[in-house]
Length: 262
Image 1 (cartoon, helix red, strand yellow):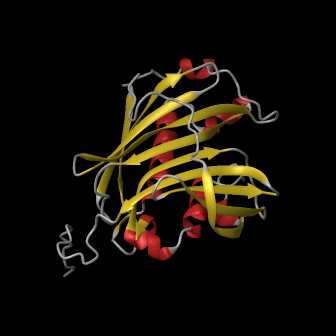
Image 2: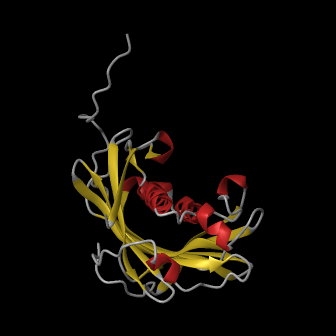
């Protein structure tokens, strides 16, 4: 089988408390977890690679949101596959489904690094374990370029803590997106819905590192660039595009039928 699928339910921690729907950036967690599960079925999970002094690292995510986001506790289905492999890069494409409709889709770029040198390794080992499904969810894999930045809108400081770390003891990718989201004005987030998310991971950070997240306007309406730095070095670049909120603030017809406990 060229594609891997897994089912999840939207949990409270991944819910937008204003709309009772999945936080768009939580989609990253489901995709990364699905990829980890897929790798485990191929004996290529992170713990399998430790034996070879290797580890996975993601360098880029691109996600487009296309339909209504699922509500709390609703079931979603992820679908992920390896779509292209070059000498050093492994590309995955993915879709997320809710009520049999795609609500998010995109791609990611991964590397396998040597744990001592931190240098990318050839992808020969991947070709021995995975099949390639040459299907692209949002088009061919091209280098992503940020929009030209204009005025700075905000800047916040974040000190990495234990909740930011993953099992490799470096900061989890999703934490950078959380920092960028925290920098956005709450009134803007209440009146807008995320349309697309592009992330470029540039450098690892660790416990107690101090990060600066600066948010900038661009020439494109409702499109922003979030630059995260440590000691002036670029750690992560994120671009977000938004649309006016498509949901009704007053949820009348909640879709869930919760049974009363007797």
